[in-house]
Length: 305
Image (cartoon, rainbow, N blue to C red):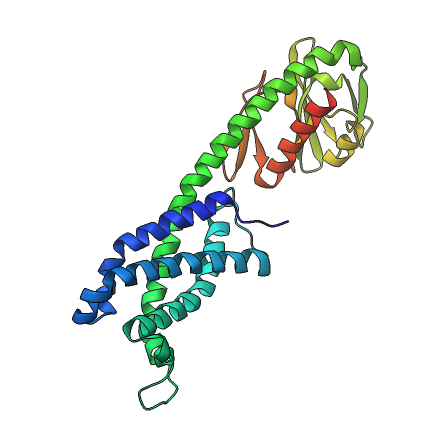
């Protein structure tokens, strides 16, 4: 089920408080000198409250009606699209709140309709047209502020996730090594190519498999010596052969990796990079495969308990 992150609400509160602090610079454009002296503190509180309410309403509409939920792990375009959609919805909402509250506070509740009608009773939107530019400008400033804040959160999220993955890897590698004698996972298997070529190898010795066109490059250890075998085959066929061995994880459309040989995971929101034991290669974990990568590590840990 889609949900709004608690941290996003907190970030909106930060922006809302900032708006209330700088709103005094904008209120002179909305009030006459006499009204400014009497109503400015009230206007700050009311406009700030409506601003926060607009942020929450637009976020709810975008998340639950338009089904566009926000995640801090999203890339720059994903976050920009989300906030732009919130702005499109939020600008008219806040404009209505702004004009209606101005009308009530400048006169009284009995004259709320002044926001919609001229003195002669003619329906008009001129007051809304006067403030729409202000609301649009505010939305641009808000998008820039939220993109900056969520960029910081995005980096924090990635660093925490990487630290979590590295801890899980260390734990699962320890568990797996302690289970190897009991599991008797020492039998060698045969990986066949489309031609008569094949490779007989212990699955535990496979470091990674790389797909390049119609060929596979299998990197493995043979009596502690780093070896490489090239076969004409597909990664899907090899996955089917190795599916009984959960420590071999699909990290990218072109790579199958043995998590026991991963020494470190690094990267950013665009994807991860994994360093492998016994080789200088740094292999990718695509952004789309990051959730599956984590899931496989957690699943392996449960199977080893």
